[in-house]
Length: 211
Image (cartoon, rainbow, N blue to C red; front, side, top):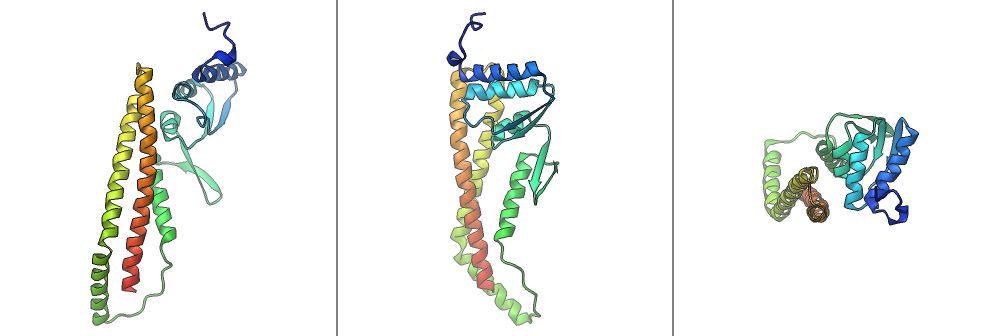
């Protein structure tokens, strides 16, 4: 084969990944521990890694922020929280919702003991809440728009991931999709931050007005 005599330094990124995994395979390890393995890989190397991991007969402990890699290779997720590690039954979308909910709970003010309210007090509270919601409407509108942008970006990312997983995809198309995916990930992260920030500000404004 023409590649047999090729020096390692002349190999492409994807070929180097396949070579390394091939050498590891000769040692027949029972487990691989990989920490952010796609950090410095190009798209070809990334795809080669995914194929190699899926073909590996042993166990793989994968630590990664690469959502596409995790979705394409992992069959079990583990949640690290509160100094403990436990199996996670949901998928990555469920985990994102869990993190967002946890962030909102941490940002919420501590609850205070309830005091008895008269009908007049309740009526005044409803009036203030209504006024506060009206005054903070721009924040709510901004939060809703950011949430839609976040969902739209993630929906497109899922579509791209499905296309990238198809066999026979040309290198040019793969590169185009990968570039688009990177931009969408940045857009989703920005939209998520704007969404949570605006939502927290809206809820805080309403609560402050109500007292």
